Image: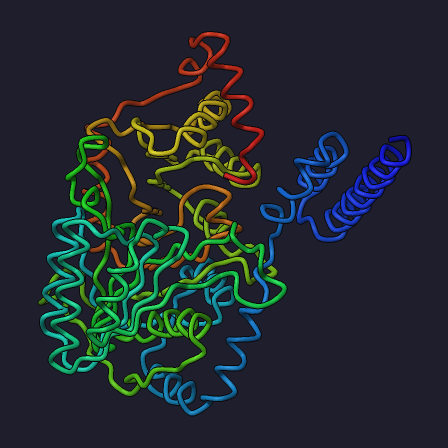
Length: 487
């Protein structure tokens, strides 16, 4: 009995020592790779205090670098150099000559994205799910060569079924269909849905962020992009996913407020390249696409013609935090106004300080967020920022009719942006995102009118929304704020 007890004690001791070694390795990794001192201290203290909980959480949630993607992209480039040369040759005549004022801020985005603003684009603003999917399905019906489609969330509901039927119809008439979805965002998507598309000739694949022996724990990363491209001529990007709630058919959320844009012109080829990089990561296959044709928009089809557009990809593959730079660039260059609509307002100090500084220099700074949450902890954390924002003159509005999910930025009279990036740390650091940045006074005017209508059905809130609540609520808010770096 004593010998058996001794054996258990030895095994227990060895397991404990092994776990301590893992904890020490995790702390060393934190110190060497954390992007901020606050993040390093937070993880290190958690590992020391609660090693059996914090160590596995760190290896799953603490990584900030998505490994292998850059190498895959270079592999695709080297193996298909002709494609890239054709793209540059096609786009070069459409590169925008920015005036000095535009170059002051747009040049930053060109360097960040390693692509150029292009002229001759037509952009149509789609301000709800009905408009967005009506436009998408119309273009799917008109497709003759290929369709590229990518969503974060795909559901097998009425809208998802309608999309599936459309894609099968396209494949049946000989149109090539390439489909990528995020396996975490679409975790509830049934195998039958995927199998039926695949058997009908659709090339459908999960993004597969955990591929590769060193990437087994990359489950905290998401491909949050929503892209549809038809024949290389028409592109869509914005906040809508594939689910009935995005059409407002949800008892829980009611009205769903979201925004997409439809683009025609040279910017579509740039958007196509973003999709292609994701598709190659997922499959290792380079589809045959059209890189030699540009159909310029003139505004006669759906919206603002002759727009200068940049499709901006950001994600966890960059040494620079592209999402953070995008928002900081928009906020700090604003002279008259900067309005931002986002379902979440859980940012780091750099974004909050930039918003405060802009307000203090007289810029009309407004943040539009939901009153009704879809995720409780991020919604709760937002309350902790209301007082400091109000003190600087930043105005916060809560949208009341339903859930607000749009990701829209409006700066002064010319620049607007619609995409997939939220005003939160996940979009800044962990998600693959894409944003259409538009330099066009006509489009900015349309976005202004749209947001003005949103503000009319919203209520302005300040610090008293936090201070007037009970003690338990305020404790919950402070605890939620501590989780902000991983929300």
